[in-house]
Amino acid sequence: MVSKILKMLNRESVGINEAALLLGLFTLVSQLLGLLRDRLLATYLGAGHALDSYYAAFDIPDLLYVSIATLAAITVLLPYLAERYGNGDAEHHDGAKRFLNQVFTVLFGFLFLVSLLLFIFMPWITHLTAPGFNAVQRVQLAYLSRIMLLQPIIVGVSNMVSSVTQMFRKFLVAALAPVMYNLGIIFGIVFLRPIFGLAGLAYGVILGAVLHLAIQLPVLIRHGFVPKFTTRISWKEIKSVVSVSVPRTIGLSISSFSGVILTAIASFLGTGSIAIFNLTNNMLNVPIGIVGISYSVASFPTLVKFFQGNERDKFSDHILNATRKIIFWSVPIMVLFVVLRAQIVRVILGSNSFSWNDTKLAAASLALLVLGLVCQSLVHLFVRGYYAMGNTKKPLIMNFLGEAFTVALAFLFIALFRHSPGWANFFTSVLRLDGVPNLVLLALPLAFSLGNILNYVALWILFKRDFPEANTFRVMRTTIQTIVASLCMGAVTYGALNILVLLINQNTFWGVFLQGFLSGTVGISIFVSVMFALRNEDMREFGKTLHRKFWKSSVIVEASEAEGK
Image (tube, rainbow, N blue to C red):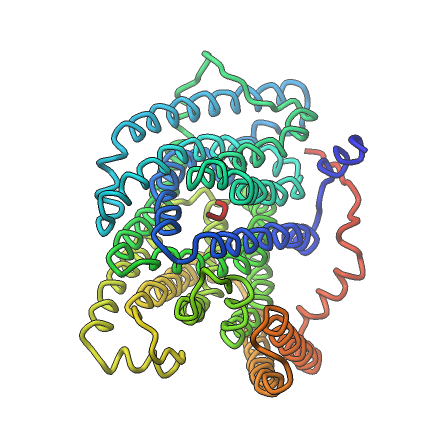
C-alpha cells in the first residue's frame, strides 16, 4: 500500500490539458474542503466578531509570507534549478542540491528573525491592521496572529521545495499540498476549537501548514533533494535569485498590503464585514484555483523551456492556447455564479449562526466579485509567462497600478454608498437587497473586481506589444463562442430556477441544493450543445482529453507549477 502511494506521488504528468486537468481535479478536492471549512466556520461562529478576528489574523502572516518567502518561490527558483540540474548526472545533481540548501538556509533564517520581531510588536501592529476593532478584539487578534506567524515559515519552505517537485513534473504532489492544508484547518475547527477556543483555529492552520510540507517529502527523498542547513553560502548566487525575485515579491507584497488596507477599511464597516468579504472571496477562489491557477502552473515549466530555447513562436502559442482554455472554462462559470449566487451562498454558508441578511449580502458580494473571475484567472497565466521570461518588472508595475486602483475605488464607492441614494438604490434593485443593512460593504468586492480587470487589460496590452507576431484569432473566436453559449446557458438556468422554485421546498438545505443543481445542470447541457453547434475546438479538445484518460497518464522520463484562510 505504501509503495503504491509513493509511486502515485512520483508519477509524472505530460501535456497542458493532462497536467492542468490533473491539477484541476485535485484542486477541486481542495476547494471543496475549503468550502466545507467555510461552512463549519459560518456554522460555529457566524458573521460576527470572532470570525472577523480569525480572518484579520491572517493579514500580517500573509504579508510576511509574500514579502519574504516568495523570494524563493517556484516561479523564481525553477529556472535556476533546471539550469543547474541539466541532464541530471551526479555532478549537476549535487550542484542543484547545494544551491537549494543555500536558499533554504537563508530563507528559513530570515523568516525566523522577522517573525520574532513581529511576535514582539504584534499588539501595536494590530492598531494599524484593524483600527476599527475595540481593545478586547485587538488583544484577541494579536494572540491569534502570533500563533499564525509559524504558518509563513512552514509554507514558505514548502513552496520553496515545490520547485523540486515541479521540476520533475510531479504535479500530483503540487495539487495534494493544499488538500492537506485544508484538512489541517478543518481538524482545527472540529477538534481543536472545542478544546482551545478560537486559538484552536490558529493551531489548525499550523497543522495544515505542516501537512502541506510533509506531503512533498516522498518526492524530495526519492530524488535526494531534502533541504539541509549549510554554512557554505554563495552570496553571489543568493543575490542573483533575490535580484530576480524582488520585483515579483514587491508585486505580491503590494497585493497583500492592499488586502491589509481592505481589511482595515472593512473593520470600520460593521460587524461581520471582514468575515463576509473573506468568505465570498474564498468562493471565488474555487474556480480561480481549478481553472486559472491549474492551467498557469501546468504551463509554467513548458514556458520556461520554450523561452530558454529561444522559441518565441512556441512560447506565445502556448500562452494563447492556455488563454483559450481559461476563457473556455471561466466565462460559463462566471455566468453560473451570477445566476446561482443565492443558491451557492445558502448551500455553503446557510446555517443558524449565519443570518438571512448576512446570506443576502454575501450573495451580492459574490456576484460582484465574480465579475472579475475571467481576468483574475488570466492574470495568473500572464504573470507566470513573464516570470518564465525572467521579466518580473512589468508584472510589478501592472500589479501596482491595479492594486492602487482597487484601493482608490474602494474609498470612492464607500463614499457613493454612504452619500448617494441613487447609487445605493441601484445595487439594492439589481441585487435584490431590499431591507438589507450595511450595503456599504459591497464597495470592497466591486473595487476588487474592477482592479483585477484593469490588471489583466494592462498585461494583455504588454503581451501584444512584446509579441506582435502572436496570432490571437483563435482566442477571439473562442471568446465570442464562449460568451454566446454562456449567455444562452444563463438564460436557461434562470428560467429553470423560476420553474423549480414552484416545485421544490426552498426551506431545507437539500431543497436549495436540488434547485441550484438541477437548474445548473440544464444550463450546462445548453452550453455544451451550443458549443458543439458552433464547432468550438476547445470543446472537441476537451472530449479528446477525457477519451485519453488523463488520470492514467504514463510516467515519462525526460533527458534533461496560498492557500485558503
